[in-house]
Length: 65
Image (cartoon, rainbow, N blue to C red; front, side, top):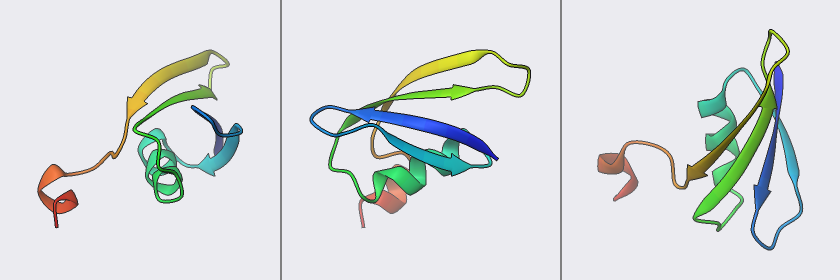
């Protein structure tokens, strides 16, 4: 499992352990009202990565229900 660190505006950084990026974002977005979040994680080969992710993440067809 990898550790993903989420930085949302006005909130403390939160660490989430998940198998992949998508699963980590989905578990984080349920408890956050942020529309945009910065995510940092370390890859298997050792590189540090950072991504600015818009929330919510998922199928827009299902999110509208």
